[in-house]
Length: 167
Ligand SMILES: [Zn+2]
Ligand SMILES: [Zn+2]
Image (cartoon, rainbow, N blue to C red; front, side, top):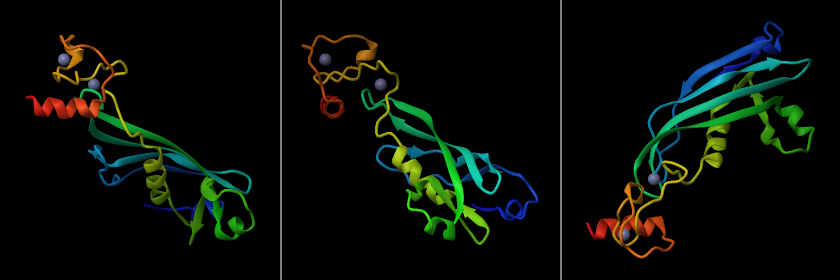
């Protein structure tokens, strides 16, 4: 969504509250997004410059990377940006990632947000910190108790494969 910051640039308002939904990224790997991204926060006008502080939250389904159990989570990203015009950006040499461009008195938050979200999104999830995973030999879910196989470190992906093979 394009956010109109004209009233702020004209000095009519000091704050613009944000609370809107935007479509989630494409599903990737084993991540399936189950709802829109909700963005809440505010743009505040300080003396001569504007900042944006917001939180983006998106729900998704995935699997535990150890035991492959279904899990539903939500991912939260904090966003802090300084608003800038193209002119003011040309005059400084620092990393532009901290800036959000004002174009035609509007800002597009969604594109940089999706980009940041994809960068920050974790690769794997576990159903619980101490998930014991599956036995690589017999495929038993070790959260439900030990099996009789000899114990050694296993690759969870192999465990899943073996579970399928020996079902
Ligand atoms: Zn698990
Ligand atoms: Zn076993």
